Amino acid sequence: MKKLRLPRISGILAWVYAALLVIPFYYLIVSSFKENDDIFTNPLSLPAVWDTGNYAEAIGNADLVRAIANSVIVTGLALALTLLLAVPAAFALSRATGRAGRMVEATFSLGFLIPTFAALFPTFLLAAATGLFHTRTFLVFLLPATAMPLAVVILTQFMRTIPRELEEAASMDGASTLTVLRHVHLPICVPGIATVVLLCFLSFWNEYLYSLIIIGPDPAQRTIQVALPTLQLTTGTDYGVLMAGTVFTLVPVFLVYALTQRQMQRALVSGAVKG
Amino acid sequence: MATQVEPPPTVRSGPTRTDGPSAWREKFPGLALPGLIWYAVFTIGPVLAMFVIAMLRWPGMLVDPTFAGFDNFVDVFSDPVFWDALRNSATQIVVGLPIMIVLAFLLAFHVVRKPRGHRVLRFVLFVPALISAPATALMFYSLLNPDGLVNGVLEALGFDGSRAWLADESTALASLIVIDLWAGIGYSAVLLASRLDSVEEEVVQAAMIDGAGNGRLAWGIYWPIARDFIGVVAMLQFLSILFSSAQNVLLLTKGGPGTSTTTLSYLIYQKAFVDADLGYSQAVGLVLFVLGLLGMFCIRRLLRATH
Image (cartoon, rainbow over all chains, first blue to last red; front, top):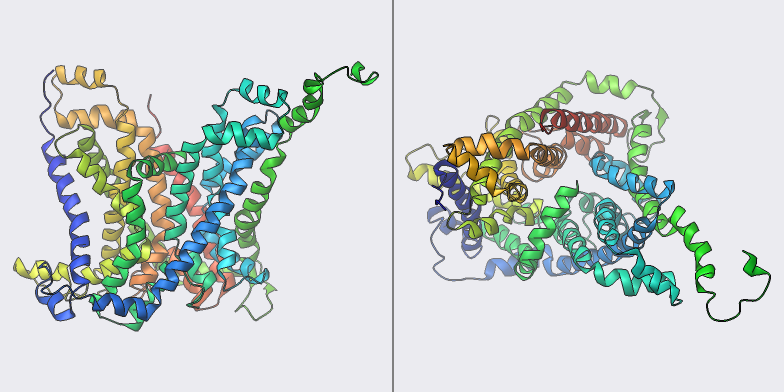
């Protein structure tokens, strides 16, 4: 087979873009160890001393450790709630044959097309009305709802692949619906659940605007994404501190990406394609 | 049903016992209800409420709202700031989206041909999809500041390196578009590559035997085959630019200088949470909602499958 000649323009383009993606991160990391003077005069050189003072200041200044803990709590609980709602829903929809089932499924599929962001303020009102305003709790309730269409559609597709005979055999042996769900469907759906968990992890962990307006400025409640930009106000133009804070917030996401690279890539692709 | 008369002889009552409820369950997916209700309360509810609030005169949370009919829309359409915001959002999309999609397609085409280093590229292209809006914004805040890396590089190349990119009326919106491109090209490319991967090798080989170069291969073979999917990715990025621009604007420019970076989604935020003009804010929300649906429809028409 003849070897392809490389598409030259797209090749140059690809590596230029890759460089544009990587260089800012390099700059981000080296700057996080430098003072302003050093950042301005030698932007791309390695720091003379690896001074972690910027990290200490960023973490202390914006209470980032507490904020990370809040993010872990919110993301974890919201993920659990998402699965708790979406798994049974997908289970029921995959078995449903009637019109009601089709209508519910269509509602979730249409959910992709509704630009819910425009409703930022009514959501804020809902938080106020439920008395959960300025708390993490409301966010734990809200985030699963935003993920529901994607989670249900992906999981329903997985559950449809399970042969009916398998399920009938199980109920013949006297297994209850929940037992069937737990012992027949869940094990087969593990890849689908992993996809949903990774997608939701990313979107919940990175969620900013809703968290900002609902949780507000309270350091005891706010998530890492809300805490990070406050450095802009408190430290002003101390870029080393800003960059240290930014690096600190990126570590958890990159850790997860490093550990689950393949699955994460597959999840991001399949998640978007459903939309 | 005759079995009801006499007690079932032995253990084999299973099928009849489960048949009834299970058939009913198939018609009515009860286990889907909690998820559906949850979804309705937290997302459909607020969208519907938007329609109501847009009809109210409501100058602040602590004031009782009164009915205003279409007054808010009259206010919105006679406000020059709204038209500025519409123009900025339109610029962001009309300039940003085609560049993003075409470059992402070229990148995807490159990666799919499996040249040397394509694995590294695929890994790197994902990176912007992982990073939150605040982290991206702060990174560009430092890159674009008057003493930042961008000006440093420009100065080293002999250009003027003193511009405050985000605070200059003539470059602020362009900077925001660049950030959209930086973040959007990689992810779109990855998505497109997943579709181009499935183009059959025979088709490509046949075209190459006919003497098709890379340009013809890209635009004549891959683009038409993936057209439908390119439309899906374009819709995705369209919504993301239209709606999430509020985050970058809030973090980087607050709509200024003047109104040069006030986009529609930021205007909603500003009117609701800064100016406390809630009816106005939600009227803009409705306009944005309709524009979102309209834009998706247009993209769908423009990039419909041709085969």
